[in-house]
Amino acid sequence: MKRLEIKDLCVAYGGVKALRGVSLSVAQGQTVMITGPNGAGKSTLMKALAGVVKPQSGQIFLGGHDVTGLSAERVAVAGLSMVPEGRHVFGSMSVLENLRVASGRRRDKAQVLADLDSLLDVFPMLKERTHVQAGLLSGGQQQMLVIARALMTAPTLLAIDEPSLGLAPKVTDQVYESLHTLQARNQLSLLIVEQSSARVVMTGAHMVLLRSGQVVLEGSARSLDAQAIEAAYFGM
Ligand code: ATP
Image (tube, rainbow, N blue to C red; front, side, top):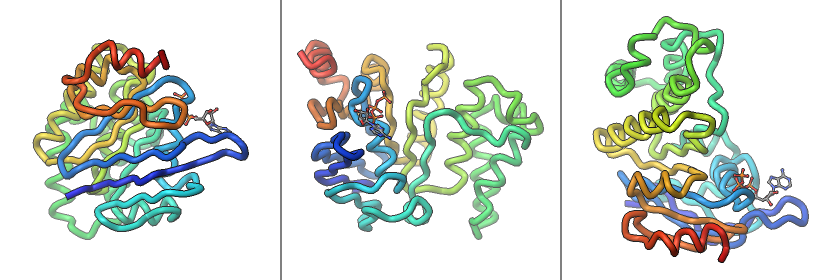
């Protein structure tokens, strides 16, 4: 079952063609990582998926439903939870309040409590700080909080834009370890933008390499040839 299917997506900002016929899919329980150099179109792809920018052409299906061109709110209702770049926590609220706010619309209250327990198990550094003001957390802790908060909406697809941006390598390792645990425990379907192709190779996930708005290389990060990745990334 495909959680996400993007077909031949084109997005332009005025005369600038940011995406030129991008197709990709994420299966149930699969992690797909999008990488590529500056200006490749990675953030545009996430914005189009989230309903923030309208595609010129192409289609986006979430769990089999056509969500192309729908508003951000309706795409969220269809099952997408997006963690945008920049770790936007509610700084004056506690860690626990940040997590509770995200589940406000859910009616399955017993499952909400179970999800909260399970997430705090995966992120022990949040569990130790449930009453700490979120604005006082470190960058890595805030990144974990925005991921946990996104999961409290019980999405069918979690999309994360640049989770490692501005984090030390060791902290980035912790973030990816937590994501790996979550994915294995809950059969999560994940779409992650990661500028570092080396990091994508380390995760061994399915890699989609974008350049100039097009997919130039795709496959299991472990099986792709390192030189082919470098050539595609730098356009050699
Ligand atoms: P980066 O890693 O630098 O953020 P990216 O791969 O996320 O790059 P995008 O930000 O999606 O790439 O940009 C793709 C192209 O669209 C670039 O040529 C960029 O200059 C252009 N672009 C992005 N946002 C806008 C905008 N709001 N108006 C005009 N052009 C834009």
